[in-house]
Image (cartoon, rainbow, N blue to C red; front, top):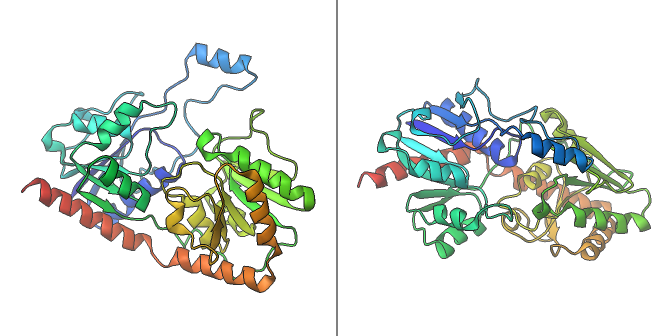
Length: 362
């Protein structure tokens, strides 16, 4: 098949990683794959001055890293930040939107670009986005592929979709792995560092501070695409790695005793699965995708969202486990992450595309 992915901007998000994985593996399976992406918008002078007045250095127009790779498939980077149009997309068999705005652009493409499929990795009605437009593209009658039971149920029950395929993400165990290990000498907690409010790092930091008040030796290790800010400073006892090299991320996971996810909303929660592949049990809020990843008391635990006291209490109970209990959870986390491969997911993704094409021709 000739397959085109429409992506909003290049970056280092978990969603970008997933798109890159599918594009690379579909290309390797003999398909002709193109990823079409527009560059980041360059901040205007007023935006830059506003950031400087607020004591922040203006953001760059583009990140220094991206998962997308011209060596793995055809990568078409637009000349400027604008909507993707028909002339940007090769004629093909399937065209795949990967974000609500790209779904709007996809709807305007001619039939020659292929059967239209929407790959839904989150309910993207965030506070700064137009909910009515996000909802409108989710009601469109084209085929949907999604990644968690929460999103599958949302697409079917709230938006009336009937042609939905659920294909959970996997994790590259060649990249994310660790040998059997013991707990660290210092209690070590890992977290993704993110400035978006719905990731709710603030509550996670508060929970760590509560835990550390009783365990001054405890460490918090974080990483992410953005550096800590004055609005969201790291707590004492924490260290952050901004934009770590890909081979460094495994080392970060592998030095943690537990991975903490504090999100208020999560389409999947890929860092949880990556950490589990590195033998790190997880504690997460019971929202969206993480409910598919963690088996309570076996490879992790759930805690109420937004409740720093409850998170701190769970951390206290977690580190009160004896070594054998922790080891059993560590082994179970690794087994969970390695039981379903990207090859499995890609075969299911390929089949879903074939079925969407066949259905569109009936």
